[in-house]
Length: 267
Image 1 (tube, rainbow, N blue to C red):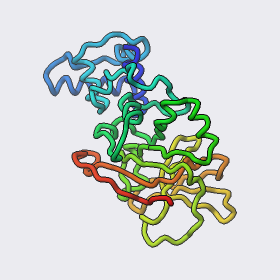
Image 2: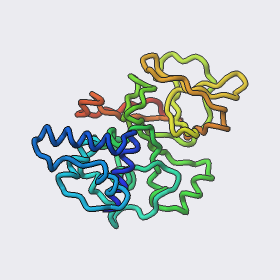
Image 3: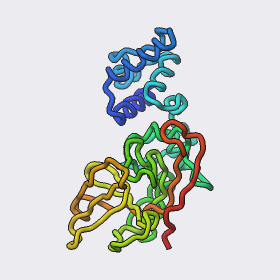
């Protein structure tokens, strides 16, 4: 239960919810179902998160619905079949993400329930990093970096409608310099970069000032996002260039079909 309690706390904080907020949601669920067993008090939820207290199956179902996550991901405690090494310095990700990264082969299609679990844009560790910590250190100091994956948070509308929230992106970590070209004939030709700053991760089109001292994140014309700016190479790091993106149509309500959009293949 400690692992489940920890995961509940992570999901709640990622969504910016208080214990009371989650408790109120379960109260609404219990009222809708006309079954008081679905209600979870804020004090009991706090004890579950801190101390790993046991919880009834029906109440765990209520919490999964209140947090908008798949029930299986709450009870999917890591097993011996999953990677034992967890790379440091990465945001908390659900067990299903670790499994997918460790065993993923073939087409770039993310699980349907991922969007609800990533409210903010997140960089995912690579499969090599999960499997071999020694090789991970070699790759970190090598020019031959492998491709990484990231998830655009469900609240990240920077690239709408070109790339929607909840999209899984593939990142070429060998491309870590901002293109200085000023004219692009379409948004599909303009490079998209995955960034890491003190505030977390970001993904979008970028511009440098004439002195190449400041990097600005440029949102799409339809996005309501601001134009964040950082000191280039001091306050922000370019993780790499996004070369492929896979999202689900109908976000956030549909999420039934998937499509793959090739943004740009790096040479």
